[in-house]
Every structure is written in structure tokens, then in C-alpha cells.
Image 1 (cartoon, one colour):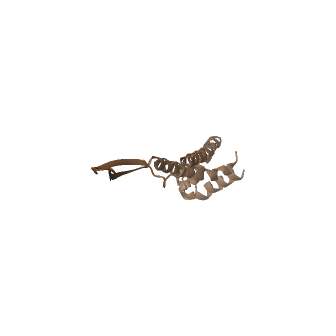
Image 2 (image 1 turned 30 degrees about the horizontal axis):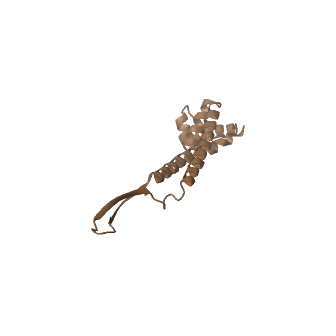
Image 3 (image 1 turned 90 degrees about the horizontal axis):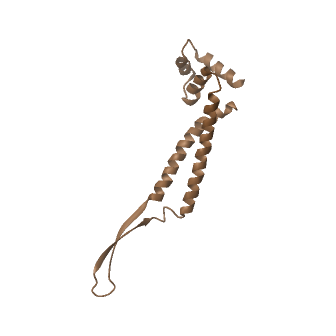
Length: 140
């Protein structure tokens, strides 16, 4: 496993969330139904007034229903690919020492400063010491 996949983890998590939002928007568009009431009268005498209730999908919103389905499939594939990267990183994290798991979690995933990471690590850890430990691990 390449350690540089860590750089993709944060982007993969964000991409999953953004893709889920886009899929929700597409599904909302598909379900959007326009409604209106139309009034008219008989063309012959006696000209009795009538009201008609009309509803349907707005064509200005969805020009081609098949294109919406294709776009949904593409978004689902994007979400699946990002999920695979996320799973790869989480599996790799289980193979490294627990101390390094904590350092990576605090620094990469939670975006803490080195001094905050050192404080969370405890046991007289210093910001420079934790940073050097991380850099040596990543270089190896």
C-alpha cells in the first residue's frame, strides 16, 4: 500500500458527501411535479364554464429522463470509487503501529497542528518530536 494514498483520503470523504448531495438534487428534480388549473367552456351553446386540474413533470427541468438516469449512474460510480479509496486507507491504517495511527488521525484527518497533536498524544510529546516521528515514518 502506498502511503501517499493518505492525501486522497480527505478528498475521497468530501467527494462522497458532495456526490450524495448531487444525487439527492437529481432525485428531487425528477420528482418535481408542476400543477395548474385550466378554465374553459364548451365550444357549443350553452357555454358552460369548466375547470380542469392539470399536472405533470416540467419539461424545462428534465429535458430527457434518460440523461438524468445516466447522470445518476455516473454519480453513483464516482461515489463507489471514492468509497473504495476510503476503505483502502482505513485497511492500511490497521497495518501500521497504533501510535502512528493516532498521529495520522490527528494530523491528517482532523487537521490539527503539530502542537495540538503532541498535546493529544500526551506522555511528554513535543510538537517537533511528533513531527519528526511522522516524517521518518512517511519516508521509510
